[in-house]
Length: 121
Image (cartoon, rainbow, N blue to C red; front, side):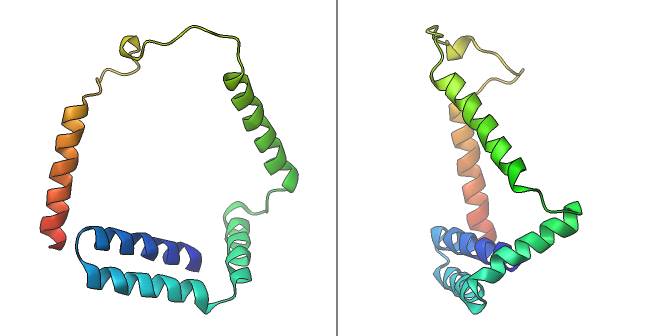
């Protein structure tokens, strides 16, 4: 849990520096670094194992991770080295009822940024 809080504080520091709140960003950065350095690095891994064991009731075996990686690698290899030479027309693909509109996404992101500046500025 300590590692998750430290990483969140580091991301928050970047966020606050991005929106010109340097003092709050420095405080978040200092707290995040303090949490990372305060305990031994070995404790981060042990906390994760204890939390996994508490959530799932058991720790997954190493073979489960190996089989998952092999399956992902196999699927990636099939897609990368397939003999299918047919190109895909992205404009012709319709997967949802909503159409991607880049200008609307840009407007929404500008509006979200301005609202964050009003909130934190």
